Length: 411
Image (cartoon, rainbow, N blue to C red; front, side):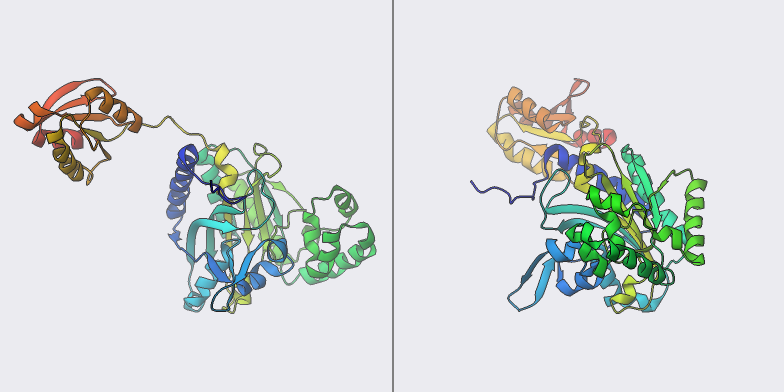
């Protein structure tokens, strides 16, 4: 038997219903915020992620599904969604057109890492990207949108917030930080030692307890913000407080990707074990420019869908639709013809062979249909159906013409 690859799961049955419920809610909220759908390819040039996510990140350094294709192109399966959307934004010259552009997307991402609960090698993200709006209120709007999604799903969360500074305040802070880290390098883990040279602020994301103890007294970028970053961060906090969204300041929050600046945020849940992050994002004002576009302010976030499936409650499925049941051989094609007509307007199920009413009723129950339409020898002669409501148990006989009006009326 051929099994699914390690770290790659089928999504079906209850998980599929939860997946659909999440997308229905998330897409509805995104559209209400003025976002439109964008779909980018799963395969991209490897250079796109080297330049955006950053060669210092674990994603680029260790986790990408990367290969050379038959055209001798260095390609990889997308490990995250933002870089592809930015590439599309620049390729379509939207950066030069001016104005604001807001997109949402969803689909599979790929990272080769050790599979565990909520962390797969093929996983799905729902993402939001906003271009052209520099106001800190757009940052607050992104956070509000994510909160609205989780609130609508009934998922409890804690919002963590930080500022990562900008090109004005980062250089001076980074010089000071590198000096202090270099002095303790021999006591840090291998990853932290490497990050001193590549992206020193990432050390605060280290999961090594010994490293965290050593890093505790070091200054954080939040303590060294320039006037503009300080003002924007205060503005984000004030906006969230104004609309009743509570948050915690987490000075260790640096996000795992190199392109973030200024606002960074993360939604965490204590209900899913060690992998507590369920969504994260922030501002990335320099990413469009770094991918050869015109300097454009941008902000966004992504939700890991598999991370939250266990947290999504499902209601009992409602009965819906009609089941056509041929009770004699002569009725099979008649039921087939009628089902095609009904499928233009309502959920329709069909038995393909003549069976007893008992067997057809069992099938209608499995499909959770509301209506059972039996057609036997007598119904063929009178051009009628035996109609039964499987919720109320009401039974009646209707002509073929009356049936459609009845079902559409109660749909």
